[in-house]
Image (cartoon, rainbow, N blue to C red; front, side, top):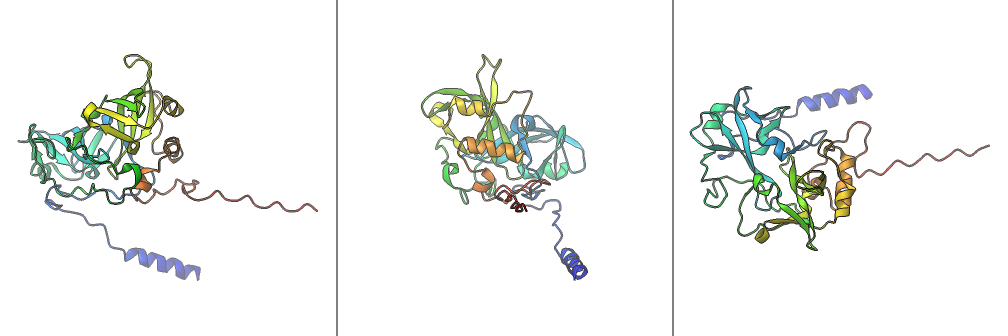
Length: 304
């Protein structure tokens, strides 16, 4: 019976449809390709926004073709709308790419199309950024960045005077709590490369003129933009920041589930992958799923 079951399982796997490979020019009419990766992986691919910006860009053939220039967020600041890249010898100042078309390597970022395909799509000028004031609107296609599946404090409404926002516009922005206490400033954003969700904000606090300051993560869903003051507001105290503090030369592993659970628990937040309804990444070998109860200890045998 065991052998029959194994053979049946192998035949079923062979009958599964193969992944579709898009050819040149295929896509949704705006972005020339579909996501290169599935949503779930063994470990979440979390990267710092400031590390992505400025990285060299290579195409699907491995050729150096330009660099990452900017990351653009949705009006609610909760997801990446597109990534602006500069392509060598292009007639356009910039080109727009979907985040999930990119794969981060050690010192470069790879896009899953070739240079010629990229040159013929999504080009725009310095004074015509898609989705921004004075720029194109409505021609970026369906982004999928809706409020469906979102619950609780992540249902933030877009500030009326803003459309999309560049990450560079948020860099260094002051952060305060609802009591008006200055907590620090925004040092960086942590982005989930598979979903495009802005997972965490990194707050720089303490020190003097950036010297001797510490860093601390906050769930990005708990941060609001106070548009009139160009200030970020969070329901937190200095004690919250101290509880998760780390130094710039010793960054924690944001793909470590136990660590990220501490971050969400500190701010009484649900993990973003639960809020957005993403399927939870498979646990590492020897690790339990997050919601699985601890195994009960075996009952002790009565002593004779």
